[in-house]
Length: 412
Ligand code: KG4
Ligand code: ZN
Image 1 (cartoon, helix red, strand yellow):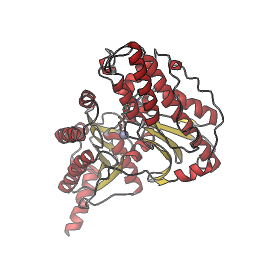
Image 2 (cartoon, protein in one colour; image 1 turned 60 degrees about the vertical axis):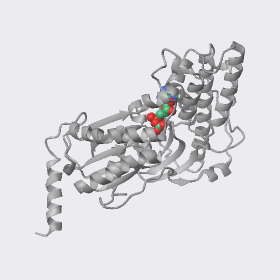
Image 3 (cartoon, helix red, strand yellow; image 1 turned 30 degrees about the horizontal axis):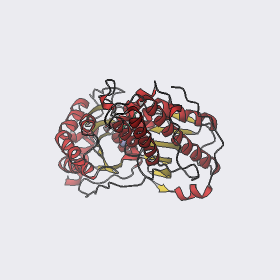
Image 4 (cartoon, protein in one colour; image 1 turned 45 degrees about the horizontal axis):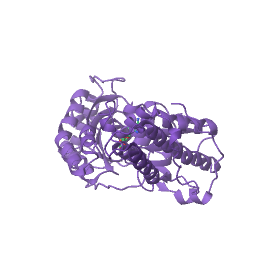
């Protein structure tokens, strides 16, 4: 028997072994190929083992959010150090919980783009060492592709569908036409909505609020906004005269900062003091961000309809990313999907935010289609900046679609 044949036989036996005696954390017992997913692109170190039936066999997640909340934002070197400290344990835990050995894996899928370079590097270096040591194929993952596909792990959603991804690092609208086939309709020109909400929360010193001390900026804004009067601060929704699907949040933040300065002067307090009107500013900030997202998404839907990019039967908008857990923003988008006849799908919060499961699932999707699977010895580079799919933002802009007016009356 040649070395090659011995290896093939070994793999077949391993595959057979993986068909039995697995104890899934939830879902069905595995009788299919197994993928280990690894995520380190931002502030979560995540790992998960998943089979082809979308059963999560084992997972582990270490969040750095509390550390970054205390320092007032992500310091890349700190994030990198924390990934370094936790990645070994997190991967080990995911494997142990799944009862799967490295030899039983059909592939390791790891986020290699986009994200913080220092952080991507930790996951990539760990993964390349791991796949070489255990002789397992490697699947490099695009973080935004993984966010977009997560919904298919939870329910049957066929291509094509429209997806709005909103998080602390990203804001984009795309048509998902296949596992690795996306049309980019719009992206942020400056910052992401989660980043804006985090900065507004910091400027308002919401961390000093007893109910908000452990919440992310976005969560704190949503909580306070529930009791606020957003009409007291009528911030302008940006890009009203630009008829495309791109986003801009820096202008909203600027308007909010000016309002905060005025209120500090009125209340006679220094920056860093909790304002009496913090709830109203939070409500107005949330409303303006929601309206901006809704308007750009409305135009994307009309563009897709005009160019037959979505099925006429049951067209779907998928909403995901950390900011997608905001109920007010979901309601704003529901108004748009109801107006345009789309169906809104949003994964539960646990799967909207970064985790190893979504990366493992993206690996499964690619493995099934035989796309982007590399031998363990291939050198892969990480890419901090990497657009998703084919960029057609200029075509969208050229179409200059005017929006019909929609009443954005959103109840808290
Ligand atoms: O997807 P994610 O966990 O990490 C990345 O940014 O990739 O998203 C985190 C972002 C933060 O900016 C956080 O403030 C925001 O999502 N976020 C929210 C809510 N929960 C988290 N924003 C608005 N409302 C929320 N409920
Ligand atoms: Zn993310």
